[in-house]
Length: 126
Length: 108
Image 1: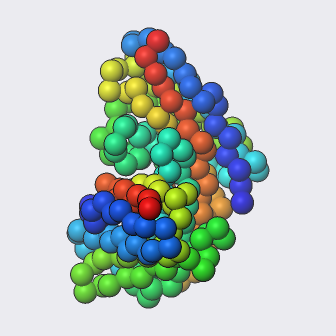
Image 2: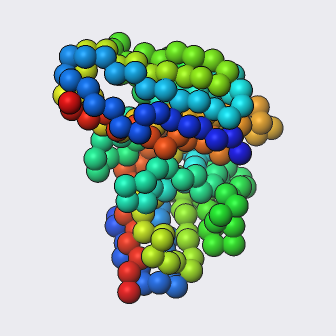
């Protein structure tokens, strides 16, 4: 399985950005996809999770109201859109596979993050 | 949210020596613990999951140990390609599965 992300973006403050993450192989609807970002020289910040099979999502508190994650099973692609961008959103955004989809999410196995997409640099600057 | 504290922030090691990295979780995470390696300009790569199981293709010089709240990554006979940033992660309380802040292993 490979996750391939869309290319770098430059946005002005207040704009929105939409990053894609395309999955190869045939496990698109069997595992959750997470989005994680990394500001320059910083650690890893979890943004949210999407179940590609039904589109259900959970977002981190810090991003609620600004982030939307969607999936398209026909193209095995998930999307992350972040709105009302500010300079602090300048970061590399990663998608990563984690967790086998089960009837109850809490019963999910294989919760480690593997593989990761190659990352998408989003620069917010006026 | 479980806080994961990684130490040290930077570790200076000579090639061929052994590096020992440590993570502490704010509460027990059982054996749901992983380690990742990140090189400049690259995405993190899974090294170890379930505390001590090496991911596919990871050399035997990488080993993990621990349980509950204390975890260790040991890198034996450091090679030039091992100098990188290492992150630990608990996934017992998932999502989100919180990450440590990272340890940079640099050449001494």
